[in-house]
Length: 304
Image (cartoon, rainbow, N blue to C red):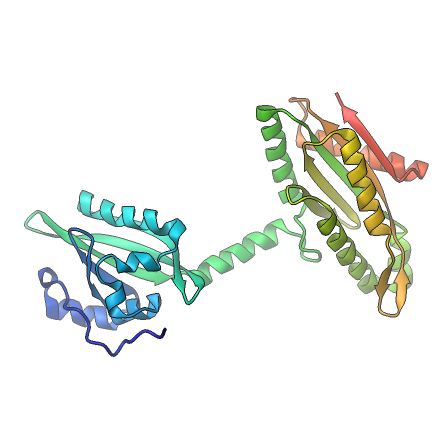
């Protein structure tokens, strides 16, 4: 439904000086809503109608709140009420539903007062979707591997630390699985780094589709991947490692040529409260090198 900006707008609050208020509100790029002391909207400027992608009548009264995302509605309403009750101003960010798509807005509510009496509030609404998306992209780049899209070492350490903290509170166990591809150097040397990158992307996809949704799979550099698992016995973790090894070992068709890679997996599991992230990863790394040296494929250890 396209907003009907050609409709007559509701009258501006007389307490602000209707002529001056409406002239200012009409030319502003921020959406403006004005409400009475009960929080019922009495005025919406053209920018608000466009931002909310709504008819004027739909925004009046408490209708404007129905456009706010259900998860953000209570906070937005409480922020407006806080501005009125304190007689000052209050801000909130939240989502509004625009044709089934979420748009992020920053709302600033200001109390309207005269002779010490609060008459209601005036709020400005600014679309910050692009700003939020840019911030989210910067965060993603800082925490994820650019080639595979998997979490990087920094995010892995963060999630492993949280997993160990949950284990200390609730019991159970945490396991780190260290994966290192075999024969990967020869693929890079013989077919080039572009082919090597395709192998890494394919391996990452296979890992992603093999692990549980609650596990964290990360690429920490080169052809090394790490998986963090919460819960599960050592035999269960061993079966997961076998599934990972089988998934990676399946032939990869890259262009017209098949590639075959194998993986050495080392794992370390603990339920001990004193173990930290780097210690657990160190044990998993050592287990992986033992598996690679012995040709065993998988080596798991339990840290008492």
